[in-house]
Length: 368
Image (cartoon, rainbow, N blue to C red; front, side, top):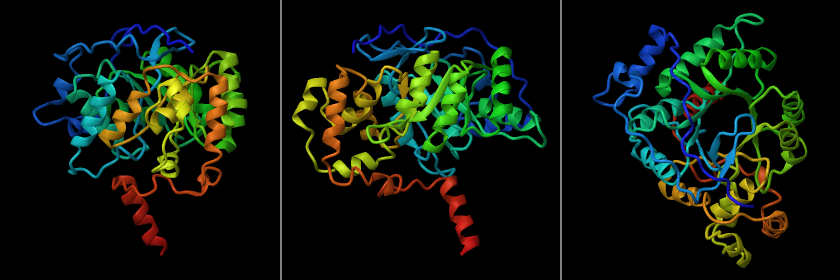
């Protein structure tokens, strides 16, 4: 599959004021790095240097609705970017730097991800890429009554503040929560210039038919779905609907939350991996995902700089064709543990001691 020509960083269409309240401004002040003030963070354009476009050899995809070009690998932040306040986070900065300098431009986060929004926003500002990053985020709001927009509006304002943004590139209805109200809300924000694209997201197979139905209506710009060499259920539902309607696809869990790496630990790559330029298992798994013609960008998450370097290396070189992808699946099916991988806990052998883990532990103690 040939690479699409890269046209550089996404174009901005102007700055739209969001009218952030005092609460959101307070969040912004908390997110600012040492020496920065909220006013400096909000200054349009500021003194941030222009980001260089990705190299011409980076694998890119076009957003069907607009033709805008995105590198095919971005940065996910679920759990991996959640950290208790005050803890060292230089490794996050290095991860983001490696992704960015390696050609990635998409950063995906969510207010549900604990401190991930704060960390992503602070570190993007520190690296001078706040305005150049293609930021995708999520909405999880219900309201106090049917069609109440209060929760959604407060969530958007808080996200804009934490990310130091005047606008979010893609806002997604997370896990289809309150979707009948949320999607019209996303469309309103898009019309008002607060977001650029509207989408939905989920990772649970049970919801794939519902996701495909929503995508099939043709009024979504993006859909984010779980898809990997193990989890291929989206092919006949969400990915097919996206291809039919010209909807961009973001992929979550392409590495199955480190479980794919666990079952191949200590195993050499098959010899045929050289045919599509894979020298690591990360390249093997990620190239399998982005080779699907409906996939726009996949979002592997990590807090480990060494793993970040492996992930971003998959953004270059040839991709496997359909026959090779089938061969890759057959090879994985010979590896012990592959068929039972779903039973393995997420991120085996890893700990992410953030606010999410703290809250989960507190709840468990109440039920003990």
